[in-house]
Length: 67
Image (cartoon, rainbow, N blue to C red):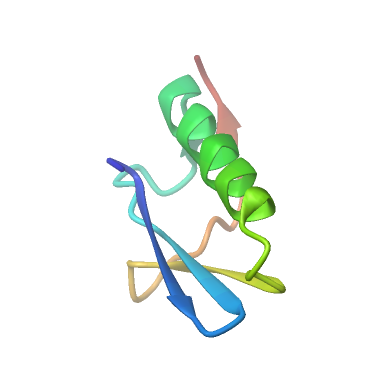
């Protein structure tokens, strides 16, 4: 995965976003994000998902939709 990583901690999956442009949701980013969520949905052991940022000072405060 280019823009995020997934790790599992028991029944909880942690999805860490690593997108360099803090507010830009590009189509490749969205495709990967939706694929990650679909993967986690199919995993019967996952009971919850935490979405976090790899960047210390940002966590998607807004978004710019740009394909």
